[in-house]
Image 1 (cartoon, helix red, strand yellow):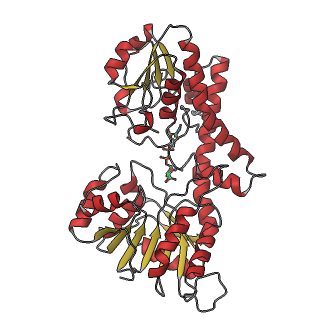
Image 2 (tube, helix red, strand yellow):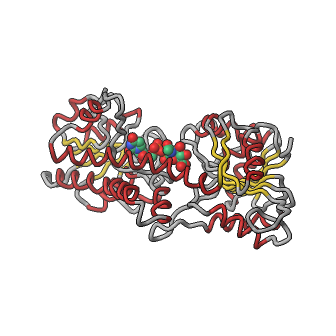
Image 3 (spheres, rainbow, N blue to C red):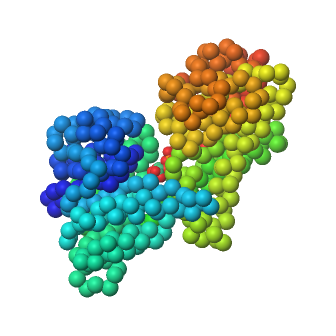
Length: 416
Ligand code: SAJ
């Protein structure tokens, strides 16, 4: 096997499952993270993030002695960087985590190593990473830096897995492998072939970077279309769910689902990287972001207007997660709406989130009460549906005869 030892930098939602899956193929894997707690947890065979079946795979890999976590890097054959790439103020991509990862691994790099950037990145980031590594290790010859005798390999291979189905999609999805040279792509394909059943398709690093941003922007633009329709239909007194169901009967129409906004760490962030790279040209991509970011305010305005009719209404918010059937509250429009409603002090706010046991710290300075569905429906004057969790499906519509319903997901208004 060409890769006897692989190091994964960043043991989060992408890095940890990737490390565990490679280890499950019998390869020695060392995971590196800056969090002492994460390192300790993983070395006990446990996980610090929620993802179906991840606990079992990590436990098996650690027990077999194939997966280890550490705070400090060691030499390896390949290094996979899976750290966050958030944006800074002004929606400019923040590459500081990638730069820190480069600084961390540079001292242990050896001739012939493969370095892969998995983090979603703006176009040009892989070139930047290669430049940083070249500067830190002038004794090694990185691609794209004039040397004839290149002895290091660098590629971008964006992760594309869907939270909630990570372990399945890690293996079954096709992978885009963007090398800094053909030799880099070939070497990276060899690594991914060890655990990917889908196709591994070689391209340039820049194209691979743009491909990932394009996938998430495609989804964002399409969701924005659905969200804009929902606002137009509200004005025109048309049921948007019925409208979309009808329009989707056309063989070439496939409108996505409107909701309270777009959440998560990916779709609401990545399109901004394209806008930042091409601010004049990326007009539709920017507008889509603005439409989706504006949707929570639309829902809040509806609730505030309904609350005006009561003295101090009880407002039940159904769902806090960023999408159905997960416990992930990161960048969640549902959480944002609930928190902002509480800050408006227009009534008593009950939150129902069947996937968590306690409210996140972020809400500790609010009066929001976490209750179960029956309590919420029993007490509420206004019910705001924010997430289509399984537990909310099939709600008896008679509940709403005496309550105001603000249904941002179509759960009640259009149950099929
Ligand atoms: N949403 C809608 N309407 C829809 C679909 C989604 O409002 O019709 C909302 C969801 O409620 C959620 C947000 O959009 O708030 C994003 O959810 P999602 O399920 O579309 O995507 P993510 O963020 O969980 O994962 C995406 C995936 N990208 C694509 O499907 C193109 C995943 O494959 C990527 O790996 C991931 O981003 C990532 O890490 O970039």
